[in-house]
View (cartoon, rainbow, N blue to C red):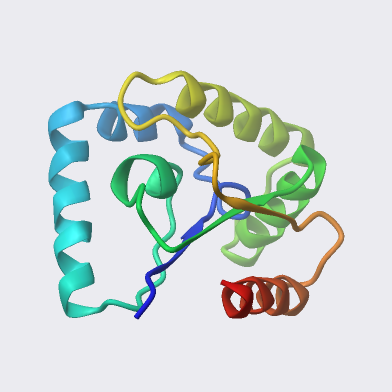
Length: 144
């Protein structure tokens, strides 16, 4: 059976980017989390996993790697909608600034940086619905 991994880098963004780097940038914690995730594949061989370093650091030998991307403005609008649904009011410009800051922090950290795996399939979600993205990913999985 194939491990289908979803490298989700562009839809969900934590507005508190500073706190993310404090935890995920620490090598010891990253290794513990990676080991835990790797052990779970023995129990759930067809699981879908998401994260900013899943396809490069945690599961570099996965059968399928999907790298989702979208324009920063689109990502900011999506995140602003999520926050609004939770009762938070924040300007889309601030959300976009936070997204770009987190992307830079995550892509330049020493341990498990945000990066597209060389063998990952890129799916641009900018002008697509969730349903369209899911169908595209299913199509890629069927081809492999």
